[in-house]
Length: 576
Image (spheres, rainbow, N blue to C red):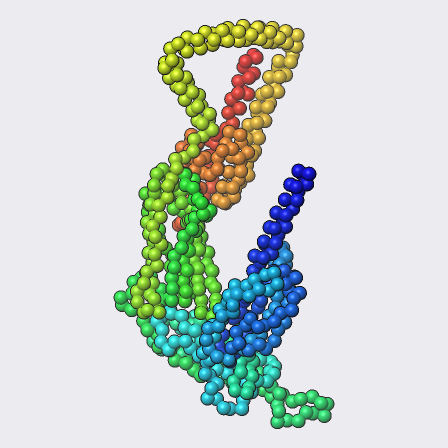
């Protein structure tokens, strides 16, 4: 009965946890684009977690009345990404925003799942077609977000194609601007817009333009071509409708490009935002003398190309050496333009224990929103560095000395107990001395009998031991051949990996985790210097002179050899 009760309790607990997870399942909302304006259609995706939720009928009463419901469809998609199975299910609602404003979808319950409140912002309409009363079925519009910019500042050109009929064979030429860099901002965005009694299918395309010289920037017209149904022509005898080509062009734009302000500091970075970030990898990083720690450094610039991001010079820091890896660049694109990332991993190698301070990093940039000089600042950091860990041999011998000292102190403190302990110890030692003498005599007798009964075997065993020693030395050298080959090929990364793998395979060096620890154990000066050069090359690949590994290959013979070599070489002498 006791067991049945425990099983029932655990079962109820598991069921309770299951239902708790189900109750905590969250429904998520997603919009098909970030910028939505009045009189434009958009899609609201409702993603659920459970198939039972999807099986229920969905009513749209929870949506604000100001958003007109146009259609509702259910989806259940499954994809394979990087070898992992992903599924997504839910509903997609097509809505029409009739008025600008901010609308809130309240917290809603969908079966056993719940959704938090969700805000939808509708921007005022773009009046590109408000005063256009032409009967054209296809219209082309373009607009710039700014009329004047600084040199190298981002300028966004938005092009929209409005179609109230079906088009075929469409094409749109790219904008041309002499003395500027152009980037298309992602893929085309497609939606519908209602203007009066006419519904248009809208295709929106955006470009970021970065003028490279001050003065007047000319943006040449873009041309859109397509074919549409010719409503003025009757169909041919075969019943096929006739089509006609159309061609539309945007106007030429002239933009005033201002030079860099005299008061602006170097480097010149006209941006809407600039941030500096630094994170230790892993986050709970510990610091030890001679052990590299990884710091990930980021520069994030909004409204800047990745080629505009500066290369930072880190100040000299007492107590640490900083080695830099090759930076990586990312360029993200959205409706707000280009956002670039400069990502760099730094190897921080402490050279002394205690508190070590890394000073702040400051980058000046020109804020194009406030039109003022601004600064991106990475605050200073203080790390606590531990002393280098002792080797296994030092750690094993240290307690013996400590215990001996402690025993002497205890004996000196207690006189009466000391005498009793001495007597007991002497009696114990006498017994063990007698046993040791007997065992030693038996061992010596066995050795004498073995030697005189099998005299030929000594030479054989001696040869075997000598052969074993030679074989161990050959294996020691052979295991370094791959490292030596990598050194001669000047392959620093491979040499580093193989060298640490070799250390882990050696019983006397398996505690080595990095080149700093191996350098500390190296008794040969040349080997220590070459290990230092290898370490510097790994964390500073951008230095002027590439790493040359021949000298390290020559110094590999001075790596610490196993202590067992000496023991095995000494054994034959004992029996000679």
